[in-house]
Length: 449
Image: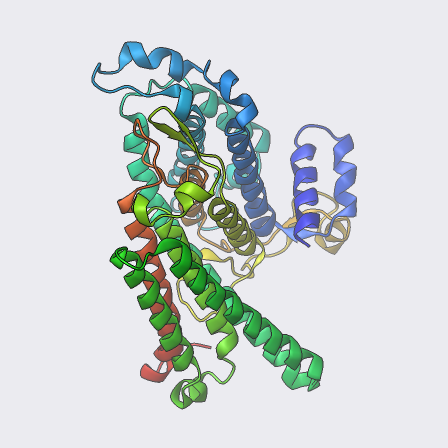
């Protein structure tokens, strides 16, 4: 499904350039502009992520040292602050790529403030002009490479950590919403069909997630703690283990089941697995003597400078991010959403008439696989807030690709600020999930379903 949507979105982009390519659209299902536009912006982020990954390729390391910011840094920065482009050029390039991308989404967010429907003159730039928008991003990236280093990387890292943390919170909302939606759909199918296959699938999924969670906890104790010392790491692992056990117990309490009979251990297992992932991610930025990632990721020491390629934690982080943004692009908010905030992130079904952007109009145009307008009377999602979310997503990708490193003269994995950001987000994840469980029981006069 996701691959088909991606191909069709690329076909839509190709239609901006040639009429021949539009023949591809006839092979695609008709969809609303609220969906197609979000997918197109997602593809834009994915393409810039691929470009950033290319700049980190070891084979391009020597070539990347010729970029403008390496050439002009020594002449324009204070003598007491030097950047070693021999070691950090890939990370500094990633910072500049996503600096341009983030500014683009901030510009779009400001431009779309107050848009109420697709009849607004600004709607054309939101849902079209893809060639111009891609040229803006490409031009911004090229221009960003001429920014002299100085304190740019360190300052932008601070923005990156704050923005990355904010996106992690949004990602938590999407994951909790996904857990509830997944469990409710499968429970509904089991109750309707009374098939043992659905029951087995529910049970197997739950046990698999809990098994991975327990395995993760054991591995964290083995690789990120020592018999003597590493007390902070032991505390983080232990407290998060206790929290996920408490959350799982709350999910099956009679008072919770009374108001949410379809809530249960499947949601808890998904949330628990994500919390342990966040714990692992946090500990990967802990102090060196308790950080197995420093010696276990193929890190090379060059003089007194560290240069590190991708590690497992970064790859998993990017996979989780990709699934989150694709889910937010395709998923439509429904009355089953357990979190009010998810209605601001996900699109509604649309309020307007279904006017085709291309084709003969009406159902005929839709049958030909054209994009139709479902926001004539009201937008399906906040366009401005959507771009804010994607600006934060670009900062999250930037920090993930650079392993949340501190871009100093020593690119060590130690970054206590990043560690606390991630561990705090893991606690917020548990708190958010518990809230979705207990809120209907506490506020009985409000409708949560």
